[in-house]
Length: 140
Image (cartoon, rainbow, N blue to C red; front, top):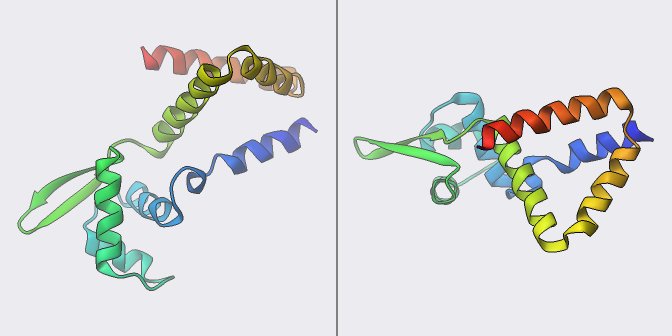
């Protein structure tokens, strides 16, 4: 039962849940490559689907505006790179989602988190506490 709940949480945590499908694909390429131009991403993604250059350029501009990509000018083009790692993105997103739920629903949200933890075995709960403590120190 707890194993099934954890699998469900991992699946829900995919980037596509919080980014659009194309945004998630672009971020995936940038996290893998490190740096890329719009043309690089169009070529990478073009292997599996047809995309217009302007569509990818718009997505990358939006991801830059959201703070997920950084860019520097190289001649007439921009070279993009992720503003944070995939893991850092997931940590921030998780923290922001939990804070938002607690802000919105208060003790009710905390009670449901506690109830979900009841279904997790003790070693896994200990590991989760360790992650939360490390994340708390990193957020300061």
